[in-house]
Each structure stands twice: as structure tokens, then as C-alpha cells.
Amino acid sequence: METPLDPLLKFEARVRGYLNVAGGYVSLLVLRLLLGYEYFTSGLTKFNGSNWFGSVEFPFPFSVLPVEANWFLATWFELVGAALLIIGLATRYVAASLIVITLVAIYAAHLPEVAEVIDGERVWRSVSIGSIGEFFDGYRISERCADGYCTGNYKLPVIYLFMFVPLLLSGGGRLAVDRWLGKLLGK
Image 1 (cartoon, rainbow, N blue to C red):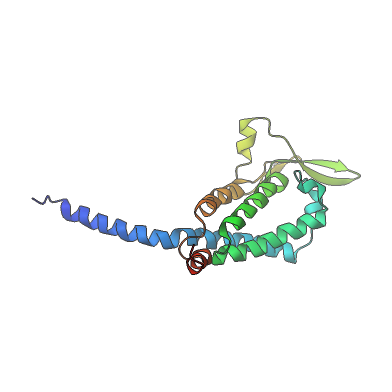
Image 2 (spheres, rainbow, N blue to C red; image 1 turned 180 degrees about the vertical axis):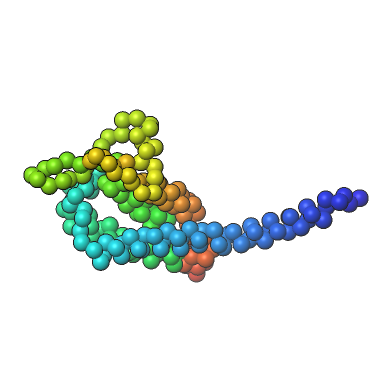
């Protein structure tokens, strides 16, 4: 005997089935397109701008590279990586590379900073985070600066890191060149 809820439950099951199929095609594509756009615009800004990497501290092993090499690597990994993400080619490798770039960027440019005057020039350097409150003070989209101290602004890069996880674990999805190449090569 059918209950009054059975038609609604059948409808919900049908909708859920359609959403599951659509999700297999769309969810990873949306992540790829959004991250690809963000990293491409970041790379394009570097490509068209002047090198400001001389004013930041990089973690090892990037700290041993010349500033120009870091600028070149960041610019081209962002531009080429973004293009590859958008089409879904080498998605897992690109995601891993951009995760590294993002972690370096958080360390070098998005953590709280303090200004020091060195040889008459104001230089910003990252400061160690002494408390959990100071740590979360930097979890914002745009930094606040006052009296030679800036809170940091690593919220967006952290969000990007979490967005990369499904791409790193699952690849580019059904609408990716990776998948089509896999089918073509029988893998």
C-alpha cells in the first residue's frame, strides 16, 4: 500500500539520481574553472607587472633561488598550470604544483607582517604567530595594517588549498582531457 509520502520520496530519489549524474560532470569542472581563472589572473598580473618578490622572505628551498627565478617559476606555473586546469590535463600534477605555490605564497606574502626600517627603507617581514588569536587574526580576505603591523590575509589561499583536494584525489573529472586521454589509451 502506498503512503502519501511515496510519490514525494520517488520524486526525491529521481532528482537525487539526476543530481548525482550531473555532479559527476559538473562539480570538478566548476572547481577547475574557478581555480584556473584565479591562478591565471594571478599569473597574468605577475607577467604584466614588475617583480616585487625581492621584498618577501621565501621558505627553503625557494630561499636559495634568485628572486628572478622565483618570479619566473611562480608566473609560469600559475599561467600554464591554470590553462592545464581549465582543460583538465595533468590535473593531479597541476593541483600538487599549485598547492606548493600556494603554501609558499601564504608563508611569503600572506602571513602577519611587521615593518622595519632598514637603511632608510621600510621593509616588511613575516612575524611568528605567538598565539591562536594572532593566528586567526590573519584569517581574513584583506589585511589590516596599523602602526607598522599587518594582520595578514591568508583566508582566500587557504580556501584554494581546500578546493584543490578533490582535484588532487579525484583528478579532473568526466569533462577533462585526462579522462578522454585515459579512455583513448585504454587506461
